[in-house]
Length: 285
Image (cartoon, rainbow, N blue to C red; front, side):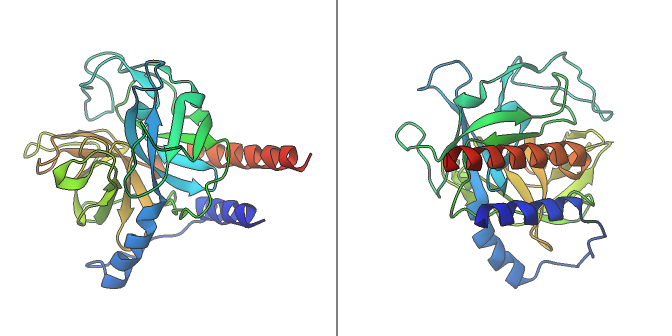
């Protein structure tokens, strides 16, 4: 019943409406709360070449007991490591992705510092949901339905009724290890400023944003892909890491807006609810 209640709360957050009141700056109470919320950021390890010993480590966020939000490029095979996009969300260099990884080859790890080569995963994916097409521009988001609920892990709220705005402050969280880039170590970065929302081209940083993307001024190291940007005013997830400059670059850190994919999120929550019911019925037999 506890997991069902968590799912219900998450679904209510999904369908609720209204506007988020803009504040001048985050208060210290919310920043303190975000220190707790970061435990809901999990590691997503995907074996993309069919070798269980060779995995790609990304980040994700638990948004329901058995549902993780991450980036599409973390769960699909890449055609190119350097996707090129324009401000309309179109690719300049063809397809970026091939087929999806087998969901069973996607493992979820929990903790402040994970080692997929020796740690035991807490769950595996059983279904992947993402936008159609094979281009990452403007569409680098995915949901993973898990084979079991994650217990003792914070469920993070996701904002689907309102977008981010230029000047907003967000806290990026991921397993990129911060400025030291210790991949596998979960770090909540200092609050970052949203520099621009798409469609836009930022001549100062070189970022090109599609209509469903936004740029922040810092963060996104290797291992942070798929990790959430958490609004410092509300504690809600507003985006996931897609691509960007180096770990130390000022700007050109691009996120996909989650509110732009509210219908996909609704389908993912529904799929997770069905899976949870099926797992519960099977356990009762």
